[in-house]
Image (cartoon, rainbow, N blue to C red):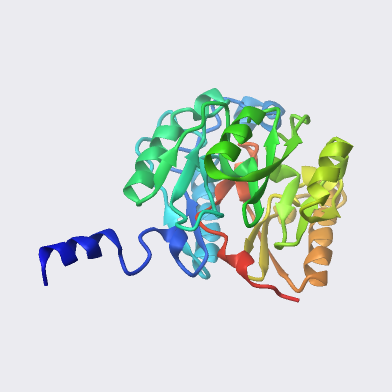
Length: 320
């Protein structure tokens, strides 16, 4: 075989060259080796006294491993290396690290985050090194952006993007021009629902859970041009109904209901969220899996915060 043929084959690999190109779901997570709550950088954390906010490290690892084992049973799950244990308190929340652009044919482009949150700014370099070594092309936007937690893929080149608290609308203008995307903007205003994944969850290619009460009516009307909305209340969002991840025909959500005292307001809110999620799942032929991630509530985060989609293969088939 000639050297020119060898060179051509090297440039055109026969199979996938990164996990996003696989014909199975793929996710990125990070074990909580550097997880801390030293800096209270969101409203949930600021409500907790300093001592109550300190995570139990062994319990946090056990809870992470439960999530990892469940996802790995049906997907390829990469574990992002932790280069150091200091100065990366939120690295475990990989959904904020960036986003793999699903609509591009090669699935090899990652837009990394340009963090607003000061203690998270060191994560961009960690993500840059990881994705470049994993055969992705990487970009960092000139304006503020906090990853997949702020930008949800609906279908084709259509996305919905949150702005106003952690990400800037200018980022989406830049992405539209550079990557030929349609992005429906939604302005976030509630400090407790500070990322888009708190109030928006794509259920299927056609339907999306949205807390319409939290957004301007004109923005919701624009979103309705692209997806059928299943409305959910602010109370359900506060309990994390939209902070779900779809794996095949299962909706994975965090719940610490068994740690709560029956009859309390927190218990009732958690039960209401779980029941509503079960109702939505049942009417769409989904199942629900609940995983206790209570130690991560101390960081103001829920399940979707801990999982970055390397692809959205679970959305490629219809259930009903």
